[in-house]
Length: 437
Image (cartoon, rainbow, N blue to C red; front, side):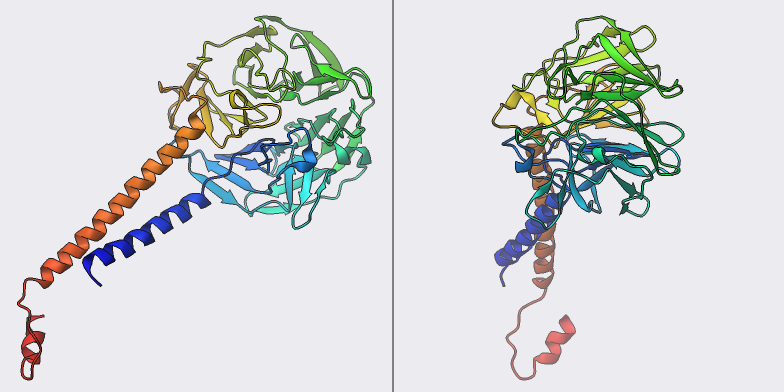
């Protein structure tokens, strides 16, 4: 085999190995997934890959994948260090998750599921799945006093308190295929220490596709979403009449907010800062994929005043049905629909990571867990496409490095061989050749 053939063979092996490893460690774009932060690991569960028929959940391409990011080390947001964990026993979307403060188990509550290796989506769901991240094990607990109407519940956002009680309000059994459905307005409570379920008496209008944030004083704050006016009638919820639930005495109340002009929305996210502010991000204004405005807003829960942080709206990613968590001073968002590129009939999905420094309200591209501030160029809506080119560039660099290494080795080997004169073996020359080797 000559030098050129050697180079071709080694180059092909390097390229195949690189692309095999690279493709295995990058999740596909998706939305309607759920996420949870467990220590330094940010987990993402399930989601929908489909880009069409967004109004028909039964036509979705549902995944059971579990991915996580290790936030204890630095990385570039264009090439996050993705890790894939053991998959769920079901494909899962339109549900929610919360982490137990007692044993750090993840509870997936409500949502819709797809039974793996079957042809159809089961639009109901076992009410709760539990994930032990230490041993990557999924279980379905036995629940005492479970309310069977909860099996078809989605469009919810549960929260869990310091005592291990999960509070889940409202939701719907809507399946997305224009069949009859119900909008719920009850509060369900699961005590995870005893696996006991209870449902409180109905007292207010139902909500769905909202955000729920538990304050340190035990108050749950419900923002945005759709509010029910009858069993099947709903409308966008006001951002200035905010429903709250007191987990100490189980009472509801309405907080009248004021301040900046904040548009109603669904499909948004919310995180709680250390000083008691709730930051909401993204979402839809209506069913036509119109982005909610402003795209980011902050609610002071001591004064109930809205304000709009000074963040570049031009280059901010327009996301809906994405994931968001707060890690130190970083608001980390991932996946979801890219609204600026989507329409009613077609959705452009993201598998990108966006990180907002909430101390300075600047987008960062270099994540450092030991630093809380950074002045980096904000990502654009084309971030999804830029990641591809960055990945290709990095891959090309690795391939070229491998090629140069192989070529250098082969040239060195050939040079070494050429240091000695060549002989045509004849009787009596064998020993001389062996001595020169």
